[in-house]
Length: 126
Length: 108
View: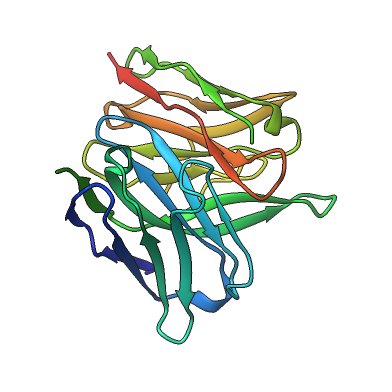
């Protein structure tokens, strides 16, 4: 069974940094795009970042671009999120999610998240 | 990027049918996927693609799409279906992802 286990969350002061990890197992990590998604307390889901299967492409939500960096180590089956210049509004549960693609008859790929980790809580407070 | 819009809350009587909708420009190009989230738990994929259910998802869950609107239908809602439901898709650029704001489903 696919497993995604996040770690690295905690309490951090505004302006400081934190690095999240997501350990993946029971699937071929190196062949799947991966994402970070966050959820502020009592709020909805917000996509944060995407990294391609080989690490060559990264995309970010406007809210974190320039402050967060997504990366991966395919030799360790691990996904990372380096979060710098943290703000109070970055406080959330951070989930890593495995990406799947459904291809229609025209060959267009439609994205979905087929597996999620249990999440790690990041609290930003002075 | 684009946005996806969902009704904040919907209710359904036990055993009845309910439709949860998701609207957005990106849905003219991309199928939505749907997630169920219960309190304190991670989201779970319930529908993806044109109308596909992952293994273990009951067949009372189905999806459809028309124009800029995607729909999740639960036929014969059960008490255990009470949860928050989110849609998502690629955005219009294809490189970002957008989520709907979520719909809280209450089963009466």
